[in-house]
Image (cartoon, rainbow, N blue to C red):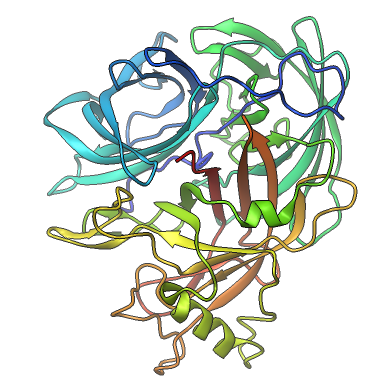
Amino acid sequence: MSATHEKAALGILSLCLCFAVFSLSSCSQTAPPVTTPAAGKVDTYFGGPFSVVGNSVGRSSSSFDHSANQIGVSAFVSNQSLLVPTQVLSGSFTKADTGFLAVSENFLTTSSGQITPQNPPMSGAWAVEIPGAGALANLLSVNTTSNPPVISAAPVAMADNTTCPDFLNSTSFLYVNVPNPNRVSSVDTSNYGIVSIVTQGSDVTFSATPTLIGTQPGTASVVTGGCSVSTLGALTAYPLNSFGQTSSNLELISIGKSGLLASSFNTTGSVSTVGAFGGGFGVIGVQELSSPVDVSAVIGGKYNGFMYAPKDSAVSGTYDVTVLASAFGNHTGLSLPCAPLVATVVGNYQRGNGNVSRIWSANTIFGGEFLTAGATGNVNDPSGQLGSENCDVAIDLGIQDTNNAGLFPNAMIFIGTTYPPFSHSNNWLCFGTNDGCAVAFPAAAVVGQVQGHYVIFVAASANSTPPAQLPNSAGGSIAQPFGIYLFENLQ
């Protein structure tokens, strides 16, 4: 993605994923299973934001037609005077052997603000869906101001938007904040947190405790928004009665019936506000379970999703390193593809530069991005046709919080010598030697279940000690926020 190209925040990635349980009477209850839709059903979701140069699309509703294998996205477009959703993308999808959906876009958004037909359809977008609940994707946009045009991945997360929440009693959710791509150098106000939600009529009250990684909980807040059925589905707007406005502190929150929560937080302009959840570009969360999660079962699962690093602005070949389709759980620390990661982490352990202060625990899951050499350059292709995912990232969940089931506040992320822009044939050598490089930094993770499948959301901060840091093309590293968003593979 060019330096001038605006990026979305994943909320995954920065459209924000969100779901919540419908009509539960207590925060101690778990989310009920939601039946996977039969063939022919059209599932609708909400997500946001989806941004391109000159044409910021703040929030969007999406449909997945499983009978025709068609996808459509409609959104508010900032360069239009009317607050009426416009179709900004249409296309088709096919399911790969890995469980990812390969999306071909017939129409997509360009940096000129035009919705442009593609003939032939543009390929290279990918999605992961829990049908009827939500999806994660890296839908494409084109920067037409560069020559040749640059195709960029716009991270997006979508959630069930069919009904307003109905919580007679307070119901707890765990969440991670999604990095704001336009404010990655600023000091974080929240990286993760716990929020209790209760409803009274259309009023939805959020009692949030935001937290920074490695510190005590921040300032708690209690705010109230209002839910209504809008042109983008059943959404909760905060501040109350702000839906339809263009204010720079508007937060739209989708609380679906499947047990996940997310928001799209518009923080443009000079207004300083932390929204309903304490900061970021929105949140991704999941309902807290009634009992501690089985960590061995979580670690034993296989997951698809995306890694999001908004400060990695370089484009190499046909992939954008800000958002990478990834998988975890297909490898172990003893697997051959993980050998460079293991060797460099062990080799850097307690080395003088302090890059790796400890080795991972037994509560660790291994994986990485699908990035291989293709005919036109490096390709982020999770179809499986170019091989399995790399093993250059380890997520150590650490110890589960004793008071909040599914919260892992002292997680750790390990990055190995083959992480992009480097590879097995071109290792990251941050010491200028052949020893290879690795880094480790603190993170927070939340784990829950949606339709009987685990979901994992991880956040790391550029402001932690040590900070989250990823390699750059010069052989050094750059501090930046980092997110990993995963759905258990339904294959």
